Image 1 (cartoon, one colour):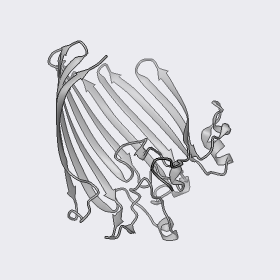
Image 2 (cartoon, rainbow, N blue to C red):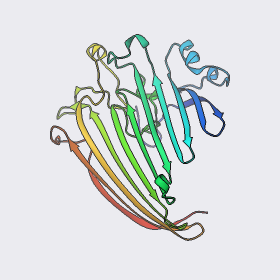
Image 3 (tube, helix red, strand yellow):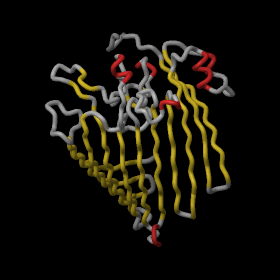
Image 4 (tube, rainbow, N blue to C red):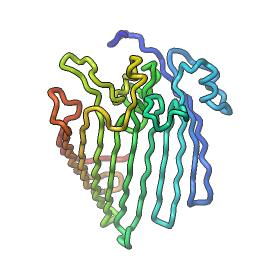
Length: 280
């Protein structure tokens, strides 16, 4: 590939169908099918009444088809649970065997407004699980990314995330938010020259590349284990309508289970920001 000014970059497209069904105000569920394709524009994907995975199969399986579903249930006023899942390239007979081609991601969480009668307080919790090799494709131009960034969960493949959030609004003008996020990730392992030692399914740009990798069994968080804990706190005060003062502190700590490697892929940081924000 050529990069830089004047280089040619193949076009990339996303075709997506989504339907949501509401059962009153309390329950919602939906289904999504989508296909990522590149290099050419395919008219077969334009039909809004087609099942995109079937169309992709009829075109010799050269594109990247995915299926998704979601559900939301408001149990009682102020308490809501949500879940969503994404599936790619599943062979049901191989579920539970650790086969790399069965790629899943799912997320579920809960939101509680005014817990235990505290009217100015909201709390939320969420769990995200992304299997190895999720979002990847044998043609890297068709992986689940745009401009190098994943379209799905930002934690990437071969990862788990536990997240908790508290939002406190003591007045109409003042809000305080605190978020804690623990990401567990299994990294690919490389030698000092950059050559792959163990492919754990953690790289968006790399799928299996040998018969041995194809025959191997993969488990979530395989490879080099790293935990990243991020604490984020922010305060916002509205001086006038549309004019806010804000301050934010983010601290990220990183721990490798077997000691920090010479060239770590995850790094700690601390970021402090503040200023005035205008909303037009």
